[in-house]
Length: 543
Image (cartoon, rainbow, N blue to C red; front, side, top):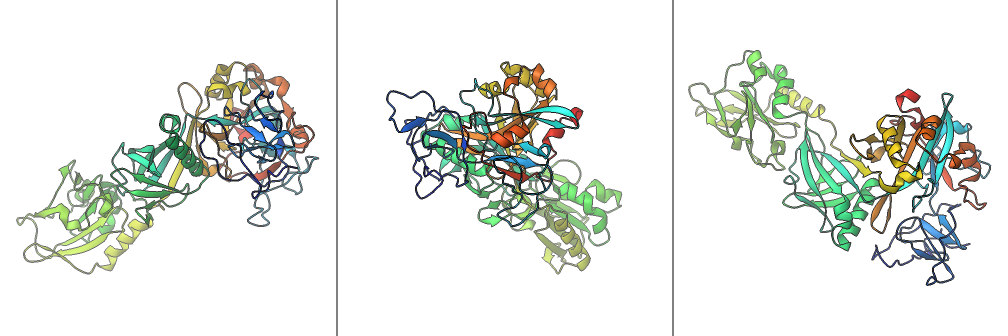
């Protein structure tokens, strides 16, 4: 047998284009999936090589070696898919150990060793490890028939090759990461840009076809590697022109300039005033909530006026929006409330002597409660730092209590167009229309995908709800991602689906793909993510 499963013996085929570096190692999972026979041999190809037609690179793979993507190998003259196909179990699987968590291994008979998957209908075939069908005039690798609530269902399963794809990253922080439209870099190469900030979060757009294929070969390679790591929930180091350095990982706290973020703000300065005004009433004479967006001043704010508070005479820098709400009190930064200030008194111009009085009590606090200072005015109406009363300190602690943990959220966004659709039907527009009519449920690795309105099949999915290591690459370069289209049998027939290629789930479990050539299907079964609906139960009219 070949050495494809031994990382110490694995070698890689050098291709003529698309990748000037190949690294990594093949998966060591036993029982590889045998794909269809190699393409017709080129006269220039050595007799001990086979051509892989799983992507446009068309690697010529020697015996015992993998292709440039590490996903396919030459095993004794047969083209095999090294990684197993991932099945999703509807019911939780008993956890024996962290290594075996939610995993069932199947024998050639298709029967599971365990109680959690005795019924075949409790399984869903995902696109993770399913292979692709380049060139896509062929049916998808798996077109699986099953039943749900006595309805005959069909799921078209494939791994799509995506050049038009990106990751949208939401970073929960008020810190200044960089100016809007600033370049985001990885290993010095441009891989994306800063986009519009949202409430309490900074947003990045990373990857995309222009970085993958529109720049230098190095830019494309670095972008592809960055996207692969990000999609597979690994940490990625980035820098922003004119801004911060970042370490982000899906579902983990972001690290900004070497400091791990802890809290997402409770709200803007005005919102914080509205939330806590009643709790401050009677304990303070004035509160300023410092915020890069809207800085709030309690006694001017509608909340303070409704409580009957009198003006403090405080004069604050910035551009007044509405009473008690100020824009542009300072520049963006990593200090108080996402501004560049370290001393909150820097945003105060002074106090009106006709209104202010000695002994007035002033709380200055940030929108996360991480920064807070208590002052009292002396005889010259100068704020002096004093010990914060316990009642006021409790409100500051409550601000922090109401701040959600800071996380980095990573969404995969891809255009599932082109010939990928030919794996489902000979008339691709009918698949697109059926999806828009909600006759087809689209999932990625069993995770629910949002399909954008308008033309095409543009999907968006949270990578943390997908199986681990769902993403791969091809050295063109492009991203490989799982995608599944689930619908009723009648809907699949009506959109001109490949009915001759439909196979029962029982047959898939027992025999694997039609082109298996007698070898068992390498597969593993994971417990469904607890936040994910069962893919066969959607769209609603089918569930």
